[in-house]
Amino acid sequence: MDFVVRDLEKGDFSKGFPGILGQLTTVGEASQETLSDRFEEITSSPDYKIMVVEDPDSNKIIATASLLIERKFIRSCGKAGHIEDVVVDQTYRGKHLGQRVIEALLVAAKEAGCYKVILDCAEANAAFYEKCGLTRKEVQMVKYF
Ligand SMILES: CC(=O)SCCNC(=O)CCNC(=O)[C@H](O)C(C)(C)COP(=O)(O)OP(=O)(O)OC[C@H]1O[C@@H](n2cnc3c(N)ncnc32)[C@H](O)[C@@H]1OP(=O)(O)O
Image 1 (tube, protein in one colour):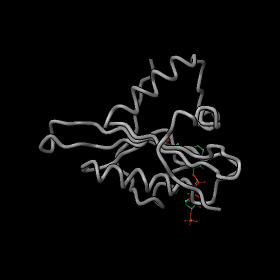
Image 2: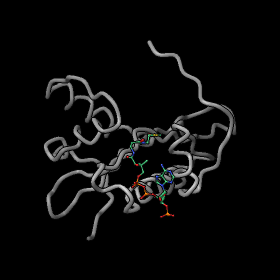
Image 3: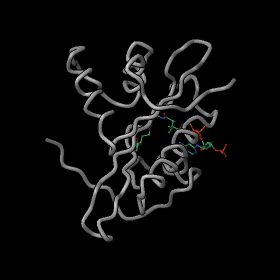
């Protein structure tokens, strides 16, 4: 099967993109207008990249991951990439689709001039990210509002 990793398109919202995110966390309610405004906001920024994988047989979105590029003053006004919202449809896991999306985002981060890429994950997913070439560093902390 020839699965293509590509940028998120507006039409992906009717191809199961929100459902895929729902396998990661709570997507919540949002009107079509709100979703559309957020899509424009994200896709018009050079600092966001959301990638998806579409199954060409079913035309369903089966995986996604996001890259946020943080512009810094340190490191000679360098940039750091943050990988977020990584998920593969449960019936497609174990086919290296997650790895392919992460590798595509790593290439994008490097091309954008990032000096590093970081992410937070559960202990259970650490081995997956190690397979993608990342290494453990420091601890994750959070405060929800
Ligand atoms: C920053 C974040 O967003 S963290 C949130 C991560 N997402 C989730 O937890 C959502 C639920 N999980 C998933 O969607 C998927 O299981 C993912 C994204 C973690 C992995 O995607 P998959 O497509 O199944 O992984 P993929 O097939 O690319 O695995 C690549 C390699 O990592 C290994 N691997 C994958 N998951 C795990 C795991 N949890 N533990 C150990 N090894 C793993 C695979 O066996 C494979 O190894 P191989 O090269 O030796 O064959």
